[in-house]
Length: 590
Image (cartoon, rainbow, N blue to C red; front, side, top):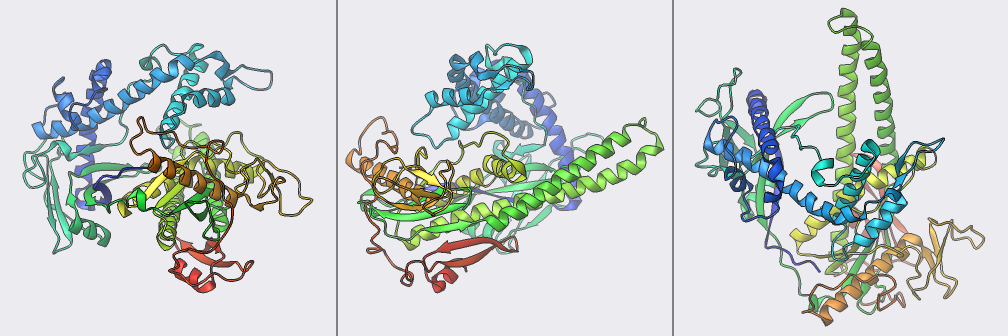
């Protein structure tokens, strides 16, 4: 189980006013040049950044090199901080590459055939990752290892051999957009590179920074007028209960070429204390699926199911997202055709002007679509995480058990437009955002979050623990499908929705992990997570009793209620199905 910290940094993005945008972008451009030059100069000493003697990265950098463009000691320290963070991240990847290097083999490369070019053998990569799997991580380490293996395979496809060192395949990283953390300065009141004053009574903050003029000369004075930024209500609430840390000035670049600067206001807030594991009586298990985004249920420590299943269905939402994604693809196709038409004429030819005007309009529309797309995904991830935390609170479950979503990957292209969309959605969208939201929200709310191995949870009977097939539907003559919606056990007769069975099994894994931790509190190293073949209990019955009911009683079996939940104002986009009464669903849906 996770041991949480007493404080947690939370970041809020504040866009700078138009009056200082030009100065902020000039400063970020000048700092980006210095950061890239510093990273390139220290690339040969990458191993020196593998050990962290201090939390401030700039101290390692300034001990090794001086600024390539001196314009203030504290400004240089802030630039060195960002360069040091880049080098530290690369040093960590180099350590991971040392684990991957012995596994690289030609079997990971699919040779060129008559109909297909050479490519990566993903089953071989998956088998290599299984040998390196860390039983005590939440899947993030496996994602890093997979990225390194695929990067090494790309190197092989280009050069005909695998790299001998990390530096052979990894080019020197280049910062493409400006970012400047003020962690190397002396604080908001006494800073030499920036000044930040919080006015909580006026619900605003006053921000000033040093920047070069249009000729590139750095002025010793601050930007005028000083920038006054309004603080939204969530930021005010956090500031009243926490401490403001050094902010970060960052550039945001849109696909159409538009750039603007934002100030990331970072607030360190206290978190609720975690409950004592000895007092935990219930575990909420949830499964991420394709048909329904989330399926949740609650078990006690004996494996009894205390709650009916809850399904968060995103069918309508997915349809709108798929429509937006296809529209983006159509716009990109138009952009490619216009670029080809424009390039028929030499630079400076007036006949290029019509295409360039149309290209500017299309790129603005693409940027707008992507903003809408990402905002919807972000809202849905927060909605799903909030629902899980709400249900854990309602049902009195102090532990939330879920499958790690970061290391799952759908292979192949899928059949038809729907199949391609499902694979793309699985690999790139809500899954990772949901896990990140749930992780930090559970930490802030004082909730235990325990990830579990998902292997076998959708093809194992939760009642007897034996392997079971999944079918296309509940009908007795339904065909067997590997990814069927209905699970039926021929050994004991249990049958139910596949996602519901997976949620029960994941909750059982959470209970087994909790019981092991309670029985062996001093075990070192930390115990491995249980799997479907090593867990110690099954779910014997659904009692519906013993539930800490803060909600009205459930209705008769088969009377499923449903509540609509809106994302970004889109009605009928997300549906919540449950055996709770309609009154209860209205409370949950707000």
